[in-house]
Length: 190
Image (cartoon, rainbow, N blue to C red):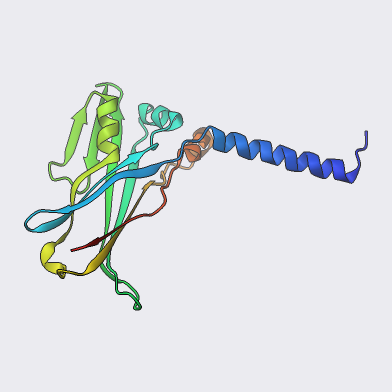
């Protein structure tokens, strides 16, 4: 059966739209929330959370024993009006989770947190620890000039997995649970 060229083109476009809609309709968007910039007597601190980071396929992969790492990128710039902004600090903080199926526990390592690793048997607690940054030191206050405008930019992403070559065929679904947030900015005057 031969269809006219216009009908074939319309069918291909319609099929493409349906496939695009389905992939975005079931995908939740990861985003940063509750971004707070504050200070102690000595340091500039950042607090933030990621929402929508844990998806069903990611949970399945974690419970299968695949280590997972979130990376948080934070930039602090001094805003200079007509001149290009001056970068004061650029940080990368990572959160890694591994699940021990024998002990039924999650081990988390947060690169910026001093105690090293944290172990919990609660997946809800593990998710909270993976998706929150609580009092990350950005810079000492002595590097900032009073009365000057600054901008903090932050984003989070799931670090790409490095798997042995033969696992790429078995775990083809891994690419389906990647996420990356947009850059979020907070302007403030010190």
